[in-house]
Amino acid sequence: MTLNRRDFIKATGAAAAFGMLHGCAGGGQGSGHVVVIGGGFGGGTAAKYIRMWSNGGINVTLVEPNPAFVSCPVSNLVLSGDKTMADITTGYDGLRKHGVTVIQDTAVAVDPVKRTVTLAKNGSLSYDRLIVSPGIDFMWETVPGLTPALADSKILHAWKAGPQTVALRKQLEDMPDGGVYALCVPKSPYRCPPGPYERASMVAAYFKAKKPKSKVLILDANEDVQSKKGLFMKAWKDLYSGILEYRPNHAISALDANAMTVKFEFSDAVKANVLNIVPGHGAGNIARAAGLVTANNRWCEVDWRTMESIAQKNIHVLGDATLSAPAMPKSGQMTTQHAKLAAGAIVALMSGQEAPDPMVIANTCYSFVSSNSTVHVASVHTYDAKEKTFKVVPGSGGLSSAANEQEAKYAMAWAKNVWADALL
Amino acid sequence: MKYRKLALAASLLGFAATALADDVLNRNMASACASCHGTNGHSVGGMDPLAGMPKDEMIRKMKDFRTDAKPATLMHQLAKGYTDQQVEMIANYYAAQK
Image (cartoon, rainbow over all chains, first blue to last red; front, side, top):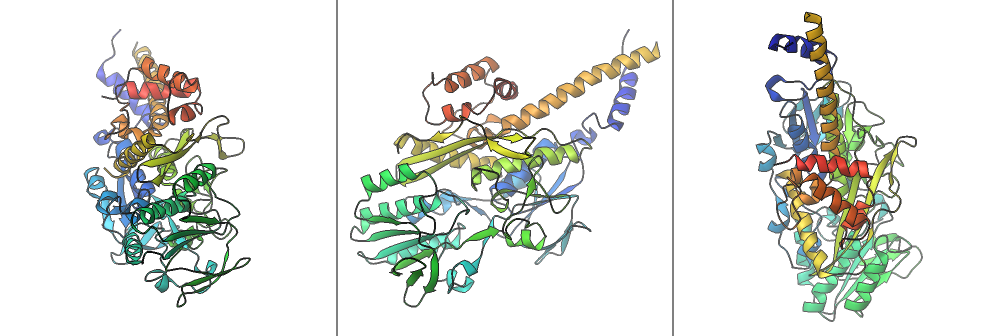
């Protein structure tokens, strides 16, 4: 018995009708239009992977206000003078090569019923599914006395890499030797748990080399170092004794920008030459405008199988904007994993299939403690169907045993590979 | 006769659909590795490429990482988060990448 082509087509036709097969038109899988808000680690990865995994079957439009992606990871090495802005910048032409339509604009509103996104300049876009990967925006009320205008000119956060990174580097360069740089860390949860401690280390490295009479003060609203504590404390003792000082329990009560002085609830006020205040933050503003913020008036809760919002159908939220699962850090790496969970689910759903079982996801995070020495933290997370959340796999993950030069090379290799995986 | 042919085609297709579903799950599982090791295992440098790595080699390496038989800075910690079956899914995917 032989099968002729017609028999096979009859059978495949029936199967396709039941959604058993991948759609074959043009070799693509799935159809429809996905709009992605935000061209960072999450939005870039999701846009690329949906194009790749649908074999070009699903149209993807990405909306991003900036002309190029500037990476927060490695940006502390721009502050120290070890890297340039060009080193941490990647354009969007790579995504265009995958067939993503990239629009440089700001999403200002979402209508979840009509399924449209309103842009600041270019009208509106219709979507079948929307991905919101907006990163974070600041809660200015967490720092009385700080305004967005002030934070853009004098009291920088530099917690979104870009012009602020350049401006903070300039403030550090302009600071006289013998000056004080103070970094105010917000209460957890915030974007990149070890980020403040890496930044303080790298500014201390710069001072040690170029301005040895200067001081770095970490004024932490938390009661302790939030990530890689032992490793950072050892590096500070070994490398920056007399330069860097860590002070816990420093929740800001008021800022006097004219006097360059910060006041605290429980401690003495601090005057500094360079004040780097990172305000508390929550999901990016567009998430709030779209009605996606459901937790503590700050974060977006999602169905972890698909990354779909629990509040709005057909809208998926990625990255720092989400209410993190237990022990899940707000990191660029983790955001790429969210993006792949969402891409796999969206391609299946837009092909008339059910979302697949969630993959295992992993976080790897390197922090520099000096120009050529790095520490890491890693974790593996698996979906718990009963509790409907991701949990760390017992026995997995861990820290570097000590700061080391080999991992400084891996840290840069990680950065180059993750930038390429997200955007090229 | 015609129905038997159709039934055979449908059953072949059933296998094909299952294989396809497995491929998708393998692909998704393997994609977590790509952040460091490159899209589809094509590292852009500084990390070992995984594309085209023979299945047995991947399984052996992951086992060695898990038992600390193979020294590592970080992979021993990640390997301990995966079951044998999950490692096999990843190994299947990368072995098939050119």
